Length: 472
Ligand code: AMP
Image 1 (cartoon, protein in one colour):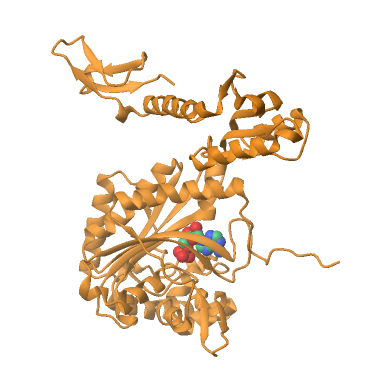
Image 2 (cartoon, rainbow, N blue to C red):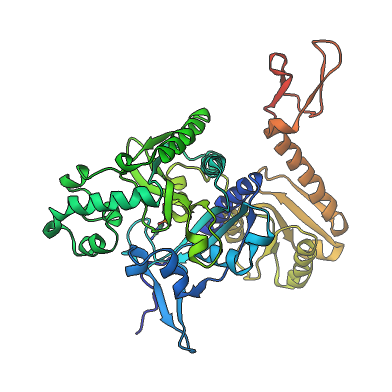
């Protein structure tokens, strides 16, 4: 019998994982929003030249990893292997350089496709969340993009992350550097892997991020870009690092960091996560790109952006137990207790759903014991029991699945019941968030009136009457 299986390097994202992904993207989109970025969406596939022209003929992505095919009209089409090129294509095609306010600030959440060798945390279809600030030379936008990334990771609660950062200069610096690399690696040409031999000819910079050769001893002694930077690039780099220092961003300068795509210049960076026990590698990276807009037919405009690998972020957050409380749940689980009550139970369930109460129902006729187990697995907050008595009297019996308290109420009171419950929930939520309670000084130092009615609300007089609530 034929077995149908996933294509290599892809994964099914089942609901337990999908909710984690949704949460991560929710937080990332929120932060991007705080920083003034708007969402953009471009096609999943582009004409192949968009990537060969921008990502670069010498890059691994273009050489080995693209999903490229001829469509039925004989056009060469490529599934996007990264987000930036398509966005810049859209920016140029829509003439946004002439009509939009610059920098044009957008974020995206894209599935991208790379024919890589699958392993833990490496897929052929992966999700990247990224931001782009298009059309700016300002150093402050480099800082803004890096700090946006930094703030996002803090908001997600990720621990042990740090930036690797480098400046790879402008084209002038890089062409001198490339010559020096060529001269240096000429001595080791026979020892380089077959890909590096090609990189040596096409773009020797790419040799530095070879996954096979880079641990070799003579790599460590290769010339460093820092020795080829112009005074302007050095100053730019120093000023950027000064800003990052002000915000206490944890970074290390890595002068072998060049990044895998051809379009970068000046600032490049990656975020890595490394704890005492484990090095998780890069969870995101980005940099400044000066020629991409002009390469794709627009004016000469410099830009900066980054992308996160969402699968890797989820993996790390799972290891660091950062998904506590993030689960699929429902408010009500309806149990018809007899066959005869199915129709009435169905109407109750539909009534709740049409009134924004998340509800599920079971018609399998399973035993009550099994239904309670299902309700637990569905994380149902309330169970609605419907037997003949309830049907005849137009009532329902609601059981709180945590406290096991139960009441029988008319169907007509159901929405009020849930509304009260949600208000209670909301109040509890408010008590969790310091910012939602505020204190009014009544003129008497010992008499503060708190807008939050929690008994355990504490007001710190030494801290500008900052309230903190412990009333859960
Ligand atoms: P890049 O576009 O290559 O700079 O990648 C940005 C981020 O995407 C990386 O730091 C990884 O976290 C993630 N990433 C890149 N390639 C893969 C892959 N094949 N599978 C999963 N995540 C990836």
